[in-house]
Length: 189
Image 1: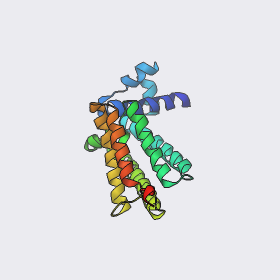
Image 2: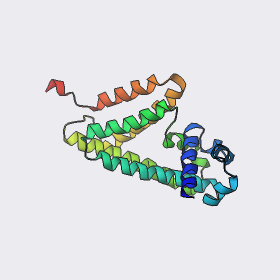
Image 3: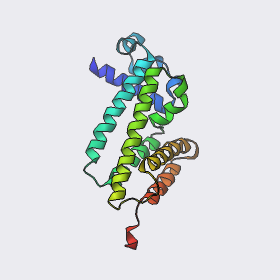
Image 4: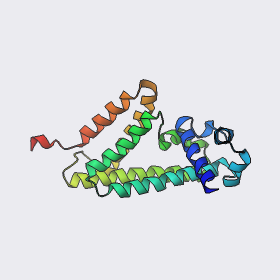
């Protein structure tokens, strides 16, 4: 039974990343998984319940991965985040935040809270990574690390959206430029 629940959550996440939360129904899940809608309702009585479960699982995964990355230098940690977005681009996905943000006002309060939690967790992690990296001489940027983290995250979100329209190379160009702009040029030392 747990396997069915996990498969539902996984497919729902893919649908959010490709179609958007408001654009899929339980039928879009039940047909490919060859289960009845009632099976989905058993685990997730409402679509909001399903959306909250997707976001909770995503946050657990994000926390797990960032904990693994913590032993790396901060520039490599940030590269890991960029690589996560790169894989999404190659799969023609946009990230959950990029998909759910435009629909934020149409979401139920429980989902809005989880979207806000996800956005805060990611931006806080990026800010912390940037600040630690700057203090070690790996990154250079003006201003507060939190403000720069907002710019990094918004660029990553936008790069996935533009990649859908303009092709995968756009993500590579944008993310490469963004990373180069943050890194300290060690060849001048």
